[in-house]
Image: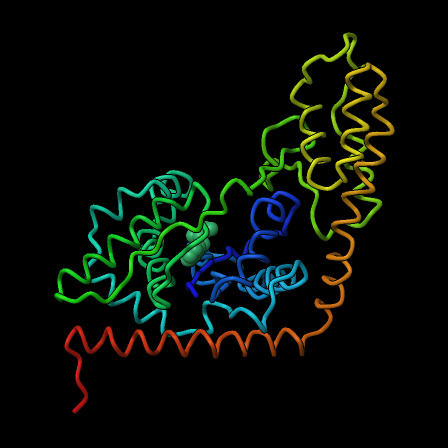
Length: 329
Ligand code: TRP
């Protein structure tokens, strides 16, 4: 079985795009691999979150991932800051991470531009902390989006460099987890290409049915096609893309047919779309509500996850320290 490490940012609520773009595949991935899922709360410190919201953010993310189907019996699900080994590995790796290469990272340059008043060392060494997360479990695979590919490349570089420097073959080179063609990009309801928090066009897993109906109703449409079999404008295509992932093939075919014959009624389409989105999100939302109120469950899950993560992390750290020459008296 291969080892997979996935870090989850502890900001914001999960939306339909997160679900179909990643999470749904994680549920299958965790059956076939030895998975470590963790909430990257140390990473979130680079932007100086309010102490009052730090824990709440972590709790929300943990709750929503569990509600969506990450299984704490199958995978190690933990909070990064519950595993202190990561900070030590981070320190050790930092000794072989160079200022020049860190400062050249796209994410660093972007953050430095966005928050010129707070270009801290944590921001600069973000890739080393991420490398520590991954190398700590000697991962084979890491599911990453486009924006994280460079960080994964740096992880490989740091691992290789460590191996070369100390003349060992210790760290494996983690590859990107490949979901094949299965990853779906969910568009926004406003005609834009992508559903995203900053775009303000999201349907959240925690949205109640009324809210979802309202959001779908507001989606951009027009008077309908005037020619048979015409190409759909982007904003209509987007509705069909979402329909494709939430509805049955019969339903999709029905509306495709109506479109092609210029008989489509957007009111009907939207009603169906909202109902089928709700069928996906509502069971998750109900679990969110249950888990949110079950502090004891969240405590148990996080302790169990941290124990599993620390077992693997402390083994790595022991070996790394030995390779580097640390010895007890
Ligand atoms: N940097 C990742 C993000 O912003 C989160 C992350 C931290 C991560 N450590 C990781 C992802 C380790 C995968 C593996 O999304």
